Amino acid sequence: MSTTETSTEFAQFELGPALQRGIAEAGFTSPRPIQSQAIPDALAGRDVLGLAQTGTGKTAAFALPILERLLSGRGNGDPRALILAPTRELANQIDVEIRTLARFTRVKTVTIYGGMSIQKQVNQLRRGTDIVIACPGRLLDLLNRGALHLKAVETLVLDEADHMFDMGFLPDIKRILKALPAERQNLLFSATMPKEIRGLADNLLTDPLVVELANTMPAETIEHALYPVAEKRKLDLLKYLIDQADFNSAIVFTRTKHRAKRLAEQLDKAGHRAVALQGNMSQAQRDRAMEGFRRGRSDILVATDIAARGIDVANISHVVNFDVP
Image (tube, rainbow, N blue to C red):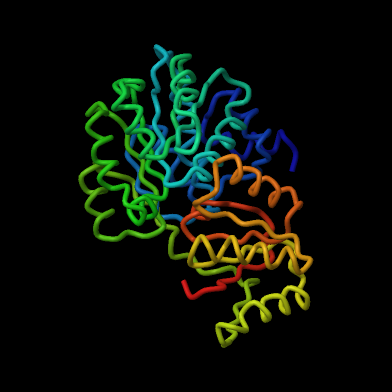
């Protein structure tokens, strides 16, 4: 589909020309269901509760309304939008997509998470930003240092709220909320709604638009297989399956960080291009691992569930639960 057709597809939202160019740059053809449902109300300033999983297009569903709002007025250098994410990988993915959509604007973003120099992040904030994309822990550190002020925030996004709860971030989120202005737009996205997240949504959102895509059926092209196997034979079975099947790009989940590291080493030694992604790695190591996997330098990503949360990688051929989830 051509760039002109792409712009026409999104013309229903009446976004500015700079964002229309960004949409074309991102390669978007037509709005995804969550975008069609959420964007009009979000543009109007309404709170949104989106029940949607990774890969449904939810980033653009909140990014485009935020960008349109930012372009309609000027800030003073303090962030006007705050996006909270559970993991560094998800924060970076959100940042990449927003930068693509905002390529033809002067909107600035800063990502904040642990594992990177806090002084570098302080310096970035001093230069001014429009959007902060952050993991809750490091954001609180900067708030406590007085290096970040959130009183100009007009829009708050909680992305993958259920994962943030699973990772113990709910108390941090509640402290962050106290630093925000009372008058703001709130957008909350979650794949599931445990009672704690339901309670947070009830307190946070006012008359929200509810978009529910979380219960969509799996794609018909997905095949599931279960292999009963003794613990000591699991590695041999995995190597056999890799040799027999067309593992173009696979993610293997393990229960522990040690297992992920060890399994990646064993697969690599057996001649398979494998790389680990687990919590003991530095941010630079994690970035290299993900970049290599995305670019095809590695065929197999061995990861713990926590480390891999929020990762959205195209063209995955196989997903293996090496351990019972």
